[in-house]
Length: 182
Image (cartoon, rainbow, N blue to C red):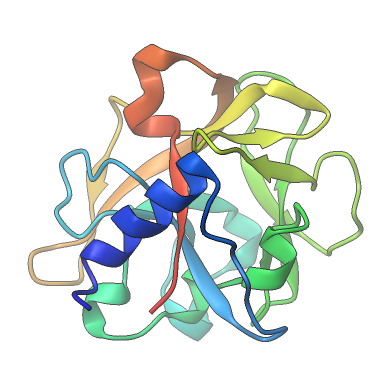
């Protein structure tokens, strides 16, 4: 099956609830925007400021060109599939979890030791909204106006800041996420 069709099929399954997300305990996935916006390779949750095993987790998360176009998933974009289904977005290689700096609008998305705190539990809804469980009106949102080009990739990679913002149909292209696996 064409790898570009898989995200759309998985998204359809999430939207209509008919395709279960069953993964082995060590399976890894990317979390990617459903809408490619202006990046044909798509945007994925990614450790900011570096690539692969050299990514500096203290810089938090960003939306970044997905690496699956290389034929694999890199460490700084790979989340533990089984934990995503439970609401925890853990980057296994670094043993850290996606963490809201605060449970309020405008908060940055950081990485911290996984402790299942209120600021670390998220839900990926059937509509693609990735929300903080303690404040489900807030969606993980890629910035719609701020972006920069990186130094790698052909064409170059593109990055956008991430934050928690009120969920809105007007911002759906920047807020609707899906689970992608190779």
